[in-house]
Length: 266
Image (cartoon, rainbow, N blue to C red; front, top):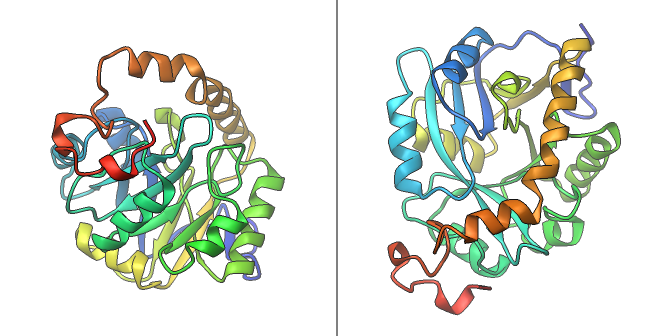
């Protein structure tokens, strides 16, 4: 066990106390729930790609029980596929599609009073950089300083961004594979009883600790997740989504009734 590093706000391999949440997972089934419980989590935020909010909510409810809460989230793809920026929203009341301008997405999240999180800041070409963090400083509630796909320099940069902007921090497993659930988490001092309470805790800067696991097994899981990253960011995936017709989270989908036509990029 390593002594907590209060200067960075991140601890490694520390037994967690309080209410523990894995704030960003992409997969959800019986095995994921079992693993989350075995890892001592109280909740996970389920935010799959290209899935409409009502479907995410329904699945989250189906897998929640008295031992583990599953809260719905949306990782929004803003901009074009080549220049996309990811934004994670918790506490949405209404649907928001992908492929809007970053300005349009942020304005809508602010209108809905959602908690706005920045996953993997500065990571590859899929997230917000320091300039964008400064531009949207008043809308963003926290930035991610660790997930298992991070290499050490990614985490150092994210912590530097947090220090420069004064934004709160979070970590998550960012699990695309079930075995990664619970590899990183946030521990809040007080219980988070429902989605509204989690949204409020994130927006209000509730006291928290950011933790992650370390060791040979964790290194293996990190390698598997990083290998999976190639497909996640490939044109092949984008082509497959677009070949399905109008994707469910495209702003032209009938579900959005043309509401976002003025800020869509496709």
